[in-house]
Length: 349
Ligand SMILES: C[S@@+](CC[C@H](N)C(=O)[O-])C[C@H]1O[C@@H](n2cnc3c(N)ncnc32)[C@H](O)[C@@H]1O
Image 1 (cartoon, helix red, strand yellow):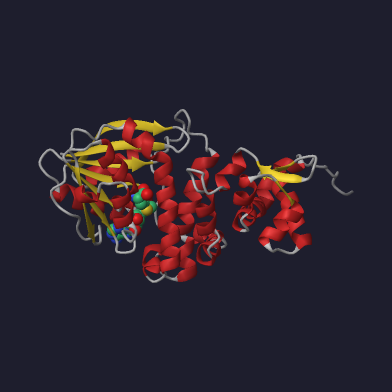
Image 2 (cartoon, rainbow, N blue to C red):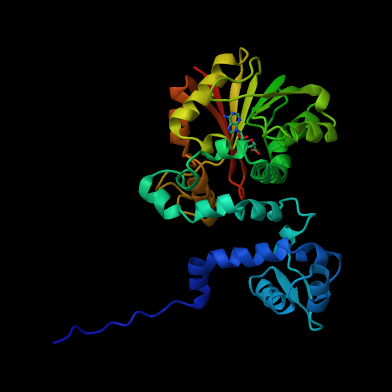
């Protein structure tokens, strides 16, 4: 006798699609933006024919793409067939404070796109997908790829721009005198901090490619005369004498051992009374309120797994790192709900 057949009811297609075709959805939005549609329709709503003429694409393929961009919620089409951006679609416009275009360009760069394709290997082997595919670390790779380096640093700085106001108003930098931003990229955060506190001086520390745009960014912000730019390797040493060592979105890129080295390097050279000011995401412990996995943290976590040997840590894990580096966790501030930005202070024991 054959076993009775059970029929499993299929969920709604709208629930299935993001799970199976999520990459297609982001490609629809990204390709539409890369073709320049977001900026064209932001000037004024446009028909498919007007957009085709402006973009210079194949009319049939392009109109399919435009319909898809409506379906994924990036564009709307009115009765006259004119396309415009939805409120969420506006993140693809050049005037958006959080530049989705830049994020898209970085994730669709062949070297990064390929790494995401090796996620299964990463999970099996416990190594960043990028290193499996390219046989080198992400940061070593971009030392030899100025295009990808520029994309990465622009992506970081658009995140920073989106959070700068919250950071500068939510955390009091006024009691410091000399801030050292470790891995501070192009100086976008220091520009905001120095602008908010005219007595402060700063040192921006990063790799040569990391600080490439810093002179322009600091000069445009009018703070170049109060900020020294220094390059080097934070796993070897960091500039001495600061009373605040800012580490924004740094420790999440590294394994525990490297994090302890970076933190210890800061502790060893900070001025008396100095501290580490760690800015970044903190995940709750399992079972704590808010510990149910949420999409924003999960995406960030997996993006790190694809690229770097790091992880988003819990407060207890940060405490462990600080202690191993001769530091003690001080004040903890949660700044931004949506971007999960915390400030953790750590002082020498
Ligand atoms: C995730 S980004 C964060 C940038 C910036 N703090 C922010 O939040 O926008 C990491 C930064 O660390 C820098 N970095 C990576 N390895 C480094 C090293 N060994 N020494 C110094 N800087 C390094 C990168 O160039 C990059 O600017």
